[in-house]
Amino acid sequence: YYVRSIDDEFRHQIEYEPARSGAVDKMSLPPVNKYIADNCDIVQPDQTVSTPEKVLHSDTVQGWHLFDNSTKCPRTSVFMQLNNPVVEDSAENQGLLRLFLEVLDLALNENRYMASEGGLHLEITNYSFNSPLFGLRLLFHGYSSKIGMLLQDTLQIMTDLVITQEAFDMAKEQAITDYHNRRFQQPYIHALLASHKVLDTPHWTNDQRLEAVEKLSIDDVKAFKEVFLKNLMIEGIAVGNILRDEASTLFKSIEDHIKMDPIVKLPELSIASLDKGTAVRHWQICPDKDHVDSAISVYLQVGTKDHKVDAIMDLLCQIMDKEAYTQLRTKEQLGYIVACEVHSRWEVTGMRLIVQSTRSPADIENRIDKFLESFRSHLEEMEDEIFSEHVNSLINKKLEPDQTIDLMAHRL
Image (tube, rainbow, N blue to C red):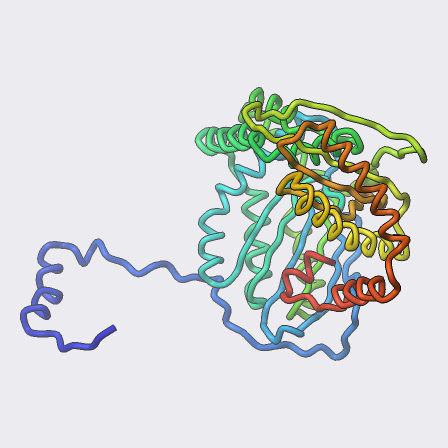
């Protein structure tokens, strides 16, 4: 930048010309941003705990809290789930939830922008891979001072939402376009989705949701909004620079904004149980018929989750992922996408091996089978020193602290 004096001619222009032309009357300052933090203090509780504790338990709201100031920043993350089992009843209800989400997103645009200018962020989704979700998940994160205000404003907009034809048309177009575009995802993504289709109950495919959305009207979404908000079980957790009493007050305020009846019980999501020694194959054509690659997702089910099984699976997949990459990608040049990972879902743990290649599915499967056979020998013959290196590497990963409050909240 540079500094210079304002000469008389320019001063005359800015003092007299705009006033004479009426330009001044058309100018205004932006509105006051109520989301700008007015308190950036790092709070100090009387005592701290290392695990989340429940601060509210009512018929409709369950709230958890964990104070953490390890980052030395006045920031907080709040996760909140609005659960109503009606969304899992049919593909139509899944489509209605998606359209309600899209319309709500449009209504929140102005508040979201002002909040982002003040260092606060809001995300809403209708999908969770790692934990059960029967509705919408809201994530608020940023400066602690005004995060409660953003949460309450969001709930107020949700309950007062008036769905216009224009907003509905935009939401429906957005949803249809998204579902259409998902057909052109990478083949390995379709392999993973096909695995969920076979294993998960209930499960609604993207094509089923697309077909449902195309038939829905604005009156359907209006009716769904009332049904969805009438019966809810809300779960939330507040993590970061927020005291226990503040978190409790925040969660109690939810019941002031949403007048809801309790849900007797949320349904249990389940995954198919595979008998020992059995193999199930599912074949399907990739929706993107112009894509030259094929992909395979091999899922090996282990059983019910517990800490010991989880630790063993983490270690096994860490070792196998490295070997699969070396053998299948580097040496055999089978494809660019080769990965082995733990697959835990609905309290059932397992592992999966993913490969995408220009080779035929039969060839890929044959290579994977040979790799698994050779990996058993590799594991049995591994020297103690090498094995200890893998163990210590995993321990270090487990002990590594969360880099941000948001990551901690996600994990919890």
